[in-house]
Image: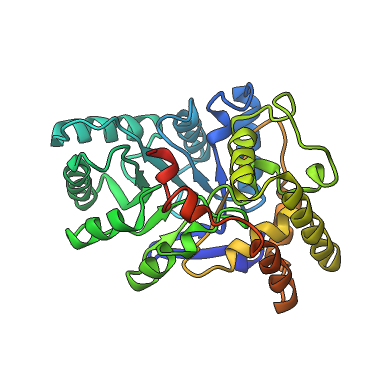
Length: 337
């Protein structure tokens, strides 16, 4: 089981594991997933203390897996609301947002996930020029107050729109954004705003799809055949914009030195570095259910304490890299270019 430091009160009624199980890898873009093996793996994650799941309406069967998992958990009696948490997303195409449209979408997730109340609904919107996102959020806030949703959150919204939303009186508890040693855009504006308004960050991409690991230390720049998942291709592009493969190898070498000093992995160091950032409640780590797992290694994050020298070494490499904020823009702008 994980230590008590592995858990965090996202809200007064929602305690989460600080390493969330990301279910995007069941979407089909990361290889085939066998349902029975995936569900058995979910029980293993839960047993080991990894009780918080991050998913979405468009992650293939992810919501259905949560529904089946919940039904299995309740087979012998009622399960307490704190037994596990499942955070889904709604990612509609921009269109006029009526109450009926919002209700229908949320009902689909409630049915698939076998629950009357969604723990956390994270909303994404593709086009800021279409301000119907405010209508959608107002309807979702009403459904939250009605008991359909416990808490309302965002995914990949920038600081400007987050401010507009909160200034319109819509209570948001978290924003899911890309955040890693490579991509430090949240440090420019997002963290300050979140701290000032009691909004948590739930970062993803923290280990760059697995690129921040020993597997890629000291190897030639990988081609398409090696970058065989959507995540690997996505984060390799980020590394290219950040400073390229040579500088990335310098970073991996430095991270390996830090990891060896603490008897942990490169991924542990990369994850701990982001967990220590202000406003970060937890980090989302992809779970290849039934295919591969890193639960034992990931657990070492909670005993790892990075010292000032460790952080200074990482900062020294970052100072040599390009600023992704000036190249891409604020958090989530990579989805709206």
